[in-house]
Amino acid sequence: MNQKETIQALLNGAYDECLQKMYVCNQDELAPYRQRFVDAVKMFGQEFGTDGEIMLFSSAGRTELCGNHTDHQGGHVLAGSVNLDIIAVATKRDNGKIRLKSEGMLMDSVELSDLTPQPDEFNSSSALLRGISARFEDLGYPVSGFDAFTTSNVLRGSGLSSSASFEVLVGNICNSFFAEGAFTPVQIAQIGQYAENFYFGKPCGLEDQLACSVGGVIAIDFKDDEPVIEKTSVSLAKEGYALCILDSNADHSDLTDAYASIPAEMKKVASVFGKNLLSEVKKADFLAKIPQIREICGDRAVLRALHFFREDKRVIRAVHSLQNGYFEQYLKEIRDSGSSSFQYLQNISTYTEPEHQEVALTIALCTELLGGRGAVRVHGGGFAGTVQAYVPLDELDSFKEQVEAVLGENHCHILKIRPVGGLVLTCQV
Image (cartoon, rainbow, N blue to C red; front, side, top):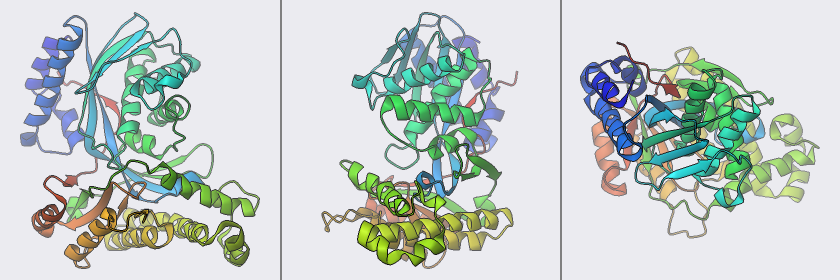
């Protein structure tokens, strides 16, 4: 459809069924979501003109539910997509160029005649566009070009994976325009990881892309090169809880070394046994060799390795609890995950400035307000950013008010698990 037809279809409710799945809402709550896409179509027209057919795309943000820093050691993770997303209005071109305008940002423009990594593009959206295009060409589906306008409500720096969501969004655009939908959500996630590793310059794992792309709640086993994914489900509302992400106000800058120290120390412990990853080491062997490991790797590395062994099993128990309806047991596993991250993994604060411990304070505040109900844990990589809390619905309004009295207005975000990941919007005409 062209832009005028698409806007009319949005306003007439032709996309409502798709929007309800994406945003986990009722029919009478759809008006702002319809309008968001209508506005995006209009802004696309302002940037790129009104000619040609367009398509609508969405890619979810994600939340790590359990498995803090287990993925990079070949462990288990429980993750879910959420009802925040990046959306795109796009049209196919045959001019050998990608032009992508993200709301509030400068235009990204990539010439597809050169698909080699460009060092001056590292850490940029252009690098991801070039890398994803290169991977599609490697796989036999050359990208001829497209124009796209995007807008996002995935919170940056929140552990909700805005970069992975962007990669999945672009992967779905290329999959629709140039591969006739040949690639699965898992393959699109892998394409995004490839672009981030070799073009963006970040040696990330695959957890974020998978959760954004597959959708719903997924248990992932990273032990082998090809991850094993198992879908599960949970209705937090039926269990009487809401999922909240709390912005601690901690500064993310200059934390690369702190993040990098975690996999580095875990791998150093694994190397004592001649292995690359901790998942290749038996816990009993690790416990028997702690005196030697302390001498070689230091005490913090021992504690972080112990976190991995305990957390990896904890994910398996959390998944079992969800699958069998033991939600209170699931919450216990989440509380234990938070405690382990604080005590053993030690990714709550860098302690370089003891007067600034925003994440620790946010966890303490939430724990006090919950009074033994629900659960709270660090969210994502740690050291800064956000905290995750499961809040009883009968306390939600009071919890949000009291948290924001300390952290600031709009620092408590109430999320829902989204059953679909990255997708092309379908129109029911």
